[in-house]
Amino acid sequence: MDTEAQHTERDPSSEPEEGSRSARVPEDSGTTTEPDEAPAGGTLFSWRRTALVGGVCVAFLLLLSHFVTQPFLIPSGSMEPTLHIGDRILVNKLAYRFGSEPGRGDVVVFDGTGSFVRERPRDNPVTGLLHDGAAALGLAEPDETDFVKRVVGIGGDRVVCCDEDGRLTVNGVPVHERYVMPGDQPSSVPFDIVVPRDRLWVMGDHRSQSSDSRDHLGSPGGGMVPVDKVVGRADWIAWPFARWSTVPGSGAFDGVPAAPAGGHGAGAHG
Image (cartoon, rainbow, N blue to C red; front, side, top):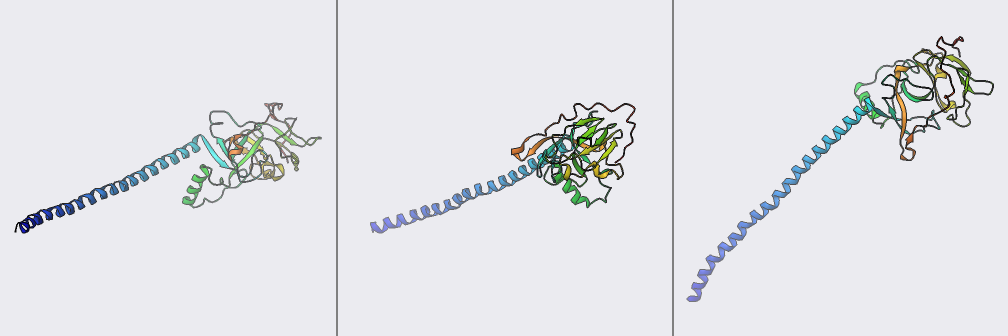
């Protein structure tokens, strides 16, 4: 009987122990689920923060490219060997912002609307905006109206090609154009022009592959680019990294005198 009593006393005591263990299970499972929920909220916050930082960076780059320096993708070989196809150049938009103007030998990017190309109907505003944004970051080719060339003549200059030795002359002084593509002539098309004030005569370094001022002598504006259409000066090659450098300068025009104050007597003709 003592044995039965002992069993009777132990049985009730064993049930709470099992119950207490089962009661602890939900508590344990609760503690394991709470940490699982916290990272989900943290991940969402992290994504939002990343998106916000990314948006701020893009906005900063767009503002920088609009006012200070803008990357441009070189789509053709018209400026070889100075600039290669696929190069991304950084154009200094402040170079001519405070009173200075493009000089002979400068490599410039300009809007050729009205001089190199005619006005054209506007594209879809949404796709145009997306393309402009990508072009501003150097991720897409520039607009068809944007060109990169070298300034050969400024307002008042008389530019002639070619002299007896096959050289281009500016204001009567021969120019040794070492930047021209080896094997190319200064120009296969003879011309004799006087650049109007506030205009530029521009040419590509790869003369045989460049459509420049020579090709638009008969167009409205005579191939002369208005100074106020210049976007900026190409100062750096930013990509590819192997070509990272400043755009080479040129001393070819150092000996060229300023144009006469009264202008040249000869008229412009091609």
